[in-house]
Image (cartoon, rainbow, N blue to C red):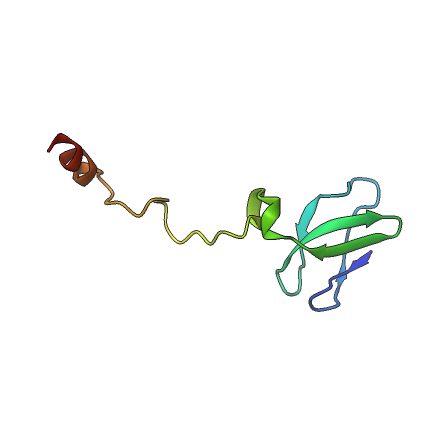
Length: 81
């Protein structure tokens, strides 16, 4: 068992199936957490520099990463002249 640094709730962590650097979320506040120590198990906030998975610090609001039109025709027309 570990404690969420955000809301201080108990976070259930499998002692035998966890490694330093693993990420998980607090069931109470939803904050993404990283395992920073194994004995005892300690958690800290996922930093934006980690760049992996849900903890990469980037908010995604749509399926289009570049914000272009769905059909992409505008890009083709701009390149063709």
